[in-house]
Structures are given as structure tokens and as C-alpha cells.
Image (cartoon, rainbow, N blue to C red):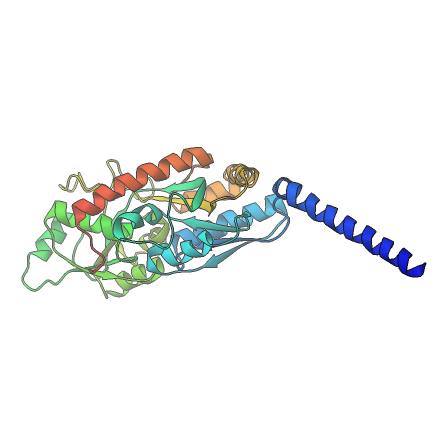
Length: 334
């Protein structure tokens, strides 16, 4: 009798467990999406300290305040953003591992014959967080150069040996400088670094003579006089640097280069409700006075696009940079 009652109880427990599993199997994805986030979220930045890292830390602070959950930033630098991007591509598609990266994401398909992921199929674009102002050309203070005209004259001196820094081979800082060199007729040796902070520091120290990068990674050093800005790669002058002439004003046409953007991605197959929730939270964050003020100081323009708008932008960027890579003849063996 006792054995029979025990078997009945075990059968009842087993049925309850089975039904619970079925319940979780069929409705838990929707339920989890509706309650997202209910634990810590990782934002992977595939670069070292500098522009994207700064943006990630600013936006993560506000997202944490809005959602009540921690948004932690984790740097996974290397291979022009590929290493960190791969980490996210292979993560669970649940919205708890995100990628915050730059325009290099759209450049890499044209530079590498094979990537460990597909930038279109393996990610869902969430939102373009912000656009940067255009690239700024600056030189080390010890260089007797105050304009592009001076730079050309200096380069034409015998044994001048100009060199320039970038944030890595194929990075937009590399492409922008190569485009400028072709348009101006200058020659300079490319010295790639592993991150924006290292590259800018190299120019400050005189290890290399010049660099082209957006305001997020250079404006503080320019304002402090640690590097000297000589030209701005945009049709109109920068509000942050009204005394610095444009390339066109300096006699170089066709070398304008936008500073790029900082966008948020999640692995493919992430629930639509999670993607929409993230995009909505980003848009709300970008209206906060603290975000607006800190972005303004960095020369950033808040965007907060929808997932669909950002997807179209990525597709257009990828096509555009394929042409830039072809024209500049940038190769990975440089």
C-alpha cells in the first residue's frame, strides 16, 4: 500500500515537472523578453581605451539607471575589432551580451577574405547611438608645421621621413589618411597601433609625426596643446575647432572623411521584443541631459535610430567602404 502511494506521488511529481518544462519551453522566451533585462548585461567593446570605450561607458551608466540592472563594459581588443565581435557573434542570443563598435565593423568585410562571422547574418543592429564629427588631421608639436601647405613643404625636404599613426591596419583612421595622402600627393610611412590612446600618445611623444582621427579620441589633447590640429576633413569647419581650416580651404579636395559612428548590436536570433526594448532604452538615454552634455564635449551627435534604420545604414556603409578600400589600395600586408 505504501509502495503504491509512493509510486503515485512520484508519478504526480513527474507529471508536474514535465508540464513545467513544457510551460517553460513554449512561453519562457516571450516572458523573458517582456521582463528584459532581469540580470547583468555585458557590452563588449572590441577596442582598447579611447572613443568607443568612452561611449560605451557613458551609455551603459544611463542604461543601468533606466533599467535597474548593471550594464558592464568589457574590452576585447584585437584584429581591428574582429576578436570582440566574434565573442558576441558566438554568445547566447538573449540580449545579455551586446557589441558596441565603430564603422570598422562595415569596413572589415572588404579587408579580410574570410571573417569568423558574417556581419549581416550573424548580428542584429539595435541602434546607431551616435555619429562622430569628421576626422581631424593633427601633428606632433615638435614638427614645424602649422598647415597642410607647411606639411607638403616639409615632406618635400630631403630625408624628412614622415610617418603617421593609425588605430590598426584597415581601421578608418588608416583609410582616411591614405585617402588624404593620395589627394595631396604626400608620402608617409604607416605605423599602426593597437588602440586610439596608444596611437595619439605616439604622436604626442613624437614617435610618429601625424595622425587623422575623430574628435572623441583627440579633442582633449588638441585643446591642451599636446598635439596641433592643422586641418578638418569636412566641407565646413568644426564647431569645436573653429580656427582649424577644412581640407578644401587648405587646397586639398576629395579627402573629406566622416568620423564614423558608434553602434549597438546583438547576436542574430535575439528575440524581437528584446531588440525593440534595447532600441527604446537607447533612445530614451540619448535624451538625458547628462548624455547630451558629455557627447557634446566629445564632438558626438546623438542618433538613436531604430533597428531597421540602422540595418539599412550598415548595408550602405559596407558598400561605401568597399569602394574606399579599392581606391586607397589598403592591404592587410601593409
